[in-house]
Image 1 (cartoon, helix red, strand yellow):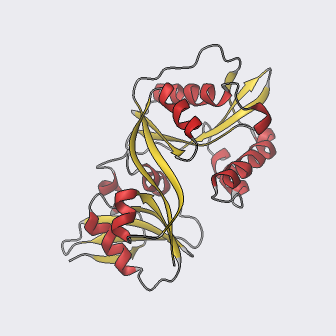
Image 2 (cartoon, one colour):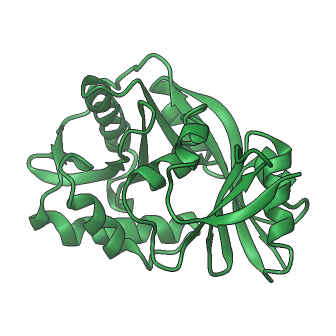
Length: 261
């Protein structure tokens, strides 16, 4: 029998998440990256001995990221939230299905992990850190990225500011000194660094800039001590999935967001 309670700190969850830092890259990075976002609670599913079997973050109207590694953990969290009203659940398919079957699919994603890096050839430019002077450009691009991904762009300013506060998190691919593509790196968790918010303005797409940025940032993370690099793709965008596969990223698992009324 599992019991779900709110946790005041991340300490009990981290060892459990570290058992599989690739699949748990999202909750691991969140919990090791500082305080939880405002109005967000950490939920833990535990057995009678106190061992953790499931983790979820609960924000108003959203259970993000449900991670279990076992159906029982996700199911226990789903049962705990059965009277929470309409919400969205985010996680890998097996976890969200165990959390609560059915639902309406909002987004479909695929988790990839880097095997052998194969950088693209012939793309001009270089990887360069984003500075405070670049903030407005980064915010605009991240906002557009969120809108295109269907997750909204309302938190772009806070998301960029949080990452700019830590050197080496936000990167541009620049050509002639001008930014043409953007991404950020998560803090390492169990040796795993995730690349996220990969975005290129529409008018600059199709030139290999995102591929070059991802490849260079992956190499930078590995050179800095990361053991693995991972990223998520939008499964409705076959182009991005092909791009990352060509760079050496290999599929791990599918997931996404479902809406439950």
